[in-house]
Length: 447
Ligand code: ATP
Ligand code: MG
Image 1 (tube, rainbow, N blue to C red):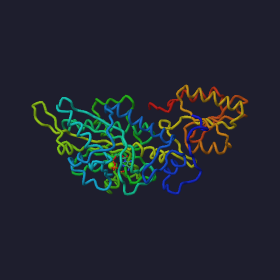
Image 2: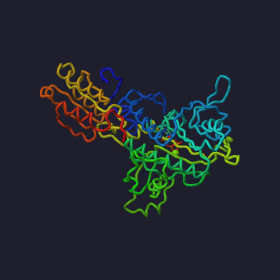
Image 3: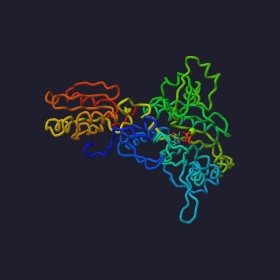
Image 4: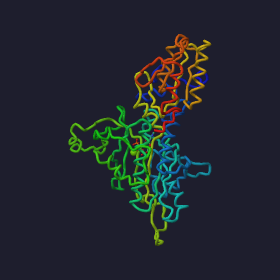
């Protein structure tokens, strides 16, 4: 992509409305534009990052055996009357009346809708278990939308739903999602820590929030140091194997949000206690037959008996993650994208646009990189060098290739790593070899 034609409205000034760094940087880097409170348009640069996050979330859901579908944003109020949640959901729900006077709503989540689909088609225990998901916009009329896309009113969520015959089966589905979540966040360059969350009237221990540590997190969190350090399972993870030992490796250590904080348990950790602020990026929840009973979703068992479906739901804040990644990865000059989600992998700076040699070299580098599947943004604008450097640092692409007349005369370019700022003078060939050889070429890290 050439910057001379790319839609990238960057800005030097700090927007007054942004209280936290990710919101400031996303606005300044021209990633998002507020439409109204808590509602954003995603501009091309931001949209590319959002798509990358979505892709990784999707790949890990698919790998875990979850099947993708797509449900609508607008739902019928009648469904929610069946589950008994229509009145109780309160003002967070955006209620809409259609032209025939029917009550509709913009979905804040999809338990009712998926249960309705499931009960219509699935009648026998033989068709279980099933894991389904979709990635769709949600609307919640939050009292205080803030922090940009981190707490929006309209936001993109991946929500999965599991259907099992019994508690043991539901637990297996839960464990699959637990492991898939750890892998997803690790691939996004984040360290997410599962923390026990409230199960309300359902009881039990099957509810975890996945929290990343960041200074501006909304909640205070406490955990054992091991959780910040231990590795997640690799690509060879077997989702059909018993995942309970892996889940235990994470749930065996103390971890709690302020809601669940226990002074004595935390104190017992001594030097191993990590105390920080956190951002919730995912939440997994087993809720048994809560919706299946209310909505009469049952199958016939082996002896023709009626069995109500055991369900769980599993959410990831896809759009929130883009903000969370920026929050976790930036410096004084701007965003520092992890390779896997960077909107482009390479930013190519032509220091003297219009100079024949520089233009030719840039053209050659650009073509070679694009051919190798390495997404590249060329700054071919007629601007002074300082402005180009500032913009490139602000938008935070992992690699910068700097082409100037002096270097090119000797056949060399400068290669800069955005993370840490290390620079190297290299021959054109070595720079290209380096960029096309390293893992993550094309911006699609396979982890
Ligand atoms: P929170 O406690 O942050 O309000 P929640 O418990 O209401 O979140 P869930 O219903 O568990 O959220 O939704 C699943 C995921 O969707 C959350 O883990 C979060 O990442 C994301 N999410 C929830 N609300 C918002 C929002 N207003 N803006 C952006 N993402 C959100
Ligand atoms: Mg939650």
